[in-house]
Length: 86
Image (tube, rainbow, N blue to C red; front, side):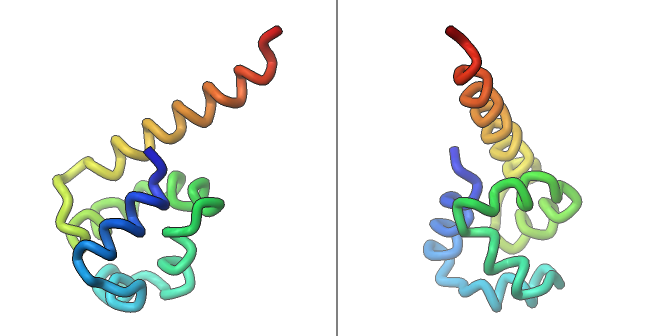
């Protein structure tokens, strides 16, 4: 599961804009705007300290974003090492 895609869809479901999420989580709007973009997954994946705030605002169960991040990292690692197999 792509964390960026999930975040973008969740924002749409809750009818929130990145500005609302930024204010509620006390993060910069520029950081929040980068979250739903597919290429920013690495930034979002390494910021586990912010997952609690994001989960609260996005109305997700505690630990949900951490699980998604772990799955995304695992998939990314698998794809990377598949390129080395012959």
